[in-house]
Length: 101
Image (tube, rainbow, N blue to C red; front, side, top):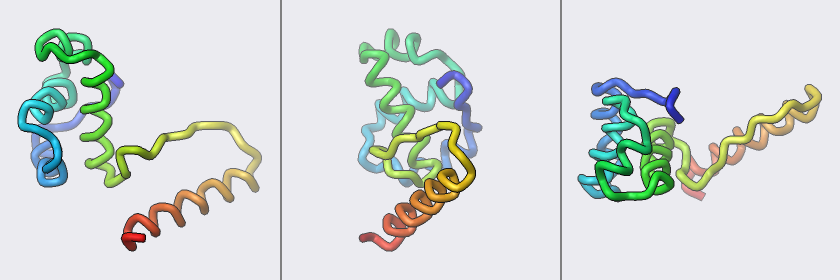
């Protein structure tokens, strides 16, 4: 997760999509994503577990990418025809989310 960074401007832009997060949770995620502190350090500062901090960071990144927070990223090597099928499935799933169904 250390490679995930955001500029202060990008973080500010995603804030309207973080309405369900508390101000404190948003601040913790900002410390990791914008300020660049480690999730362990953020956990120590906040009293949360590293796993909870990781979940906060993941939620902000998902909001930034407009991906539902419960979706999982899968990275595998596939034959071209299967890769095309997976890409099509992802496109269709995203379209269903965008359509609100």
